[in-house]
Amino acid sequence: MPTANLHHTHLFSSDIDATVDWWRRMLGAELAFDDMFGGARNVFLRVGSGRLHLYDQPPRDQGKGTVHHLGVQTDDLAALVAHMESGGVEFRAPSREFGTWRYVMVEA
Image (cartoon, rainbow, N blue to C red; front, side, top):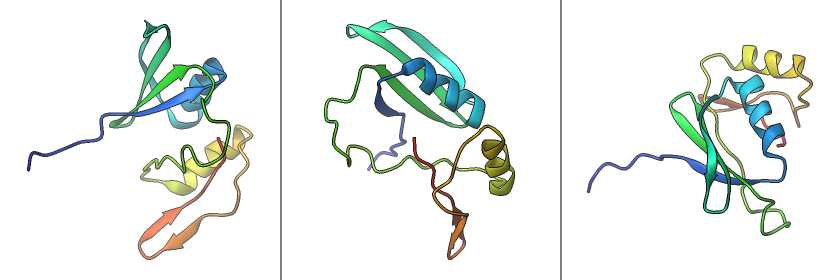
């Protein structure tokens, strides 16, 4: 079987400018592409070694469950949490541990 790598996660965005701003300020995302195609503005962000593809259009399904979560890896969770809190992000709960994994959840 050939090796497969996740290229990007594609999300609809009701406010693409606010979404891009949040990912850049909170997680250091870099703008890779911002242009029209497929009849709408599309933005690709580099987030570390991953990519996020935003489509300037409200979600087609307003119900919950369209996307469960996005996982973002960091080498310093405490520092990232402190940075995000200083930017006004509120977390659902403190950091949690699951075996050797540590994680924290934040709403979009």
